[in-house]
Image (cartoon, rainbow, N blue to C red):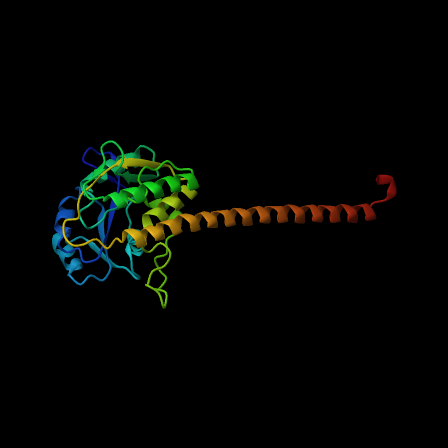
Length: 285
């Protein structure tokens, strides 16, 4: 599970998962910033029409190409997580906004005891050259709302640069196998840009130890973002509210089950006592 570094000390194997959709012009920059000694690089492609997979193979012959089975960034990440074999998974955007050279900083946070290293643009050492005022205000609102709902203290809910131990993938409960739903936009719950919020919610529900790591967001190098501030903002809000209601329903179901189990046990004990009393001689009562 661990690889020996030059000093002879064991180091975790790191897998980088990069979701792509027509990012051929950005990949040279992103790949040039990848740290050395990675276990594997997985590019999950959304059926690009600009030869993104071919460019990735030319830049890095050992790259693993995975074609996502539905649509959206969330589905791409889910497919990449399933394909990963390293001890640690790093989520890196393909547009050049996140700097892969920061990955070692996130890995150190995990080695210091965190289960999940969450990037933040709003801590000392972090920042952004790309975020607009509307997105900043929206992110602030969602972060505060999320913290109230889930008892967290996150400063940056919607940033997509995160690194975590692969052993925690089951806790995220992401669907990487179901086919696209009929008569829809081809996306399931969490398949879009709301994926970061969904991951943070399920990380909080699982009680994982989360450390925020300062990170600087750069401007997209080429092309236009597929992010829709309003539409994706609505999906983020729905994710926060719906997952919270699901948590309440599960807790209510668990409480009902416990009460029912207790009542059944009590009834069974009373029936047992009655049967014993009716069969034991009176002088033994």
